[in-house]
Amino acid sequence: MERECAFFEKYFGARRGARLEIMTRAECVKEPRERFATGFAHIAISVGSKEKVLELTALLERDGFEIASAPRTTGDGYFESVVLDFDGNSIEITV
Image (cartoon, rainbow, N blue to C red; front, top):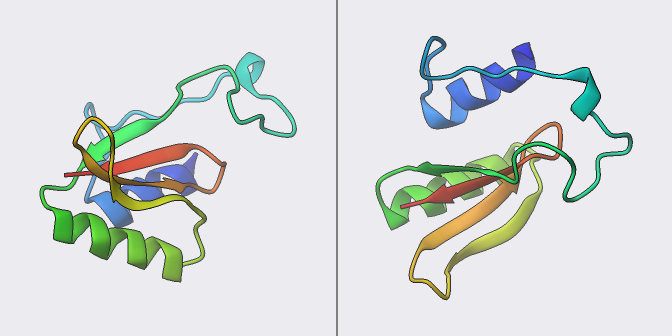
């Protein structure tokens, strides 16, 4: 839990409190983690600009995180990338 909070604080400027609440439920954990396991599908975080998406994606990759989807414009017009956090959760970084 501590590692997950630190991830969002370091890379997304999140602050602990009512706006960042990360919880676990033992009955939702699957080993090994399946691509579409029970729980949320992904978290999308807007970082404000295409340049910030590129910059943050590169930083996360340098820090050893897997980039599940490189920065691109999606079919519905969003510029985004997808990174996997420590636990394999998909984090969508978007404008």
